[in-house]
Image (cartoon, rainbow, N blue to C red):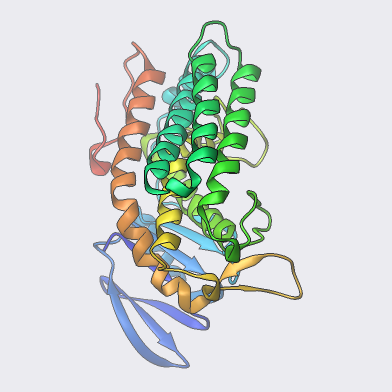
Length: 329
C-alpha cells in the first residue's frame, strides 16, 4: 500500500505507535500501518492530530489535501526536502538560456506524438469514427513535423502545442457516447462526467510530479515550456504534459468498459459543475492506483534525467539514496 485515501466526513485521526487510528463519534474504527505509506490523499473535512502530521513529515510521506465534492486542490504537505541549493541555482540559469527552448521542444514533440499514436490506435478499434480520427491524426502529424523542424522559438512551440491539442480534442470527444455530453475540454469547473474524471486525474498526476520534483531537489515553480507564473508549479506542468495522453487513454477505457457511467456523477444546483459521487470515488481510487503504478516509475526516471541534464558537467548531488535517486559526488 503506497497511497492511502481518506475520504470520509467527520473522522478523527490519531497516531497509535507505528499506525494511524481512525475514530468516528468517539469509537475506534480502524488502523492503517504507517511504514508502507508514501503518500496520503485527504478529501474533505477530517480532523488530524498534529503528531500524525509530524510523523508523516518525519517519514517523508507527502499529503495532498482536496476539497470535498469537487475534489479541488487545496494544498500539500511535505517532509524534509532536499537541501540542494546549487542544483536550484543551475535550474534558474537554465531557465534563462537555450536549454528552455530545447527541452520545451522535446516536451511538445513527445506530447503530440503520443496524441497521434492514441488516435491511430483508437481508429483501429472504432471503424465508425475512421474519418474524424484519421483527419485529426494527419493534422497532428503535420504539426509534429513542424515542431521537429529548425528554428522554432518558444512562442511557436506553444502555438504548435495548442493547435495539436485543438485537433486532438475535436476527435477525442467523438469517442464518447452523446449521453455523457462531452463536447469540449472544460476545466474550472468541469461540466460533464468525462471532464470531471480528466480533471481529477490531472490533479492527482500534478501532485505526483510536484512530489518527485521536490524530492530530487529541483524547484517546481521554475519551468521551461510553462514559464514562471506566480502561484503555479510550472515545472510540474511541464512534466504532466508528457503523461496527459496516458490520462486520456485511462479515462476513455474507464467509460468504454462501463466502469463509470453518467449515474456515477452529480451536479450541484448551488454551483455549476459536474463531480464524481462519493460512493463512486471509492471505486475510482483503486483503479487510479493500479494505473498510476507504471506512471510513477516513469516519472521518477524522467525527473532524475531532467535533473542530470540541468546539472550538466557540474559536480552536483542529484537526489538521495533514501528516495532511490542517483547520488553523484
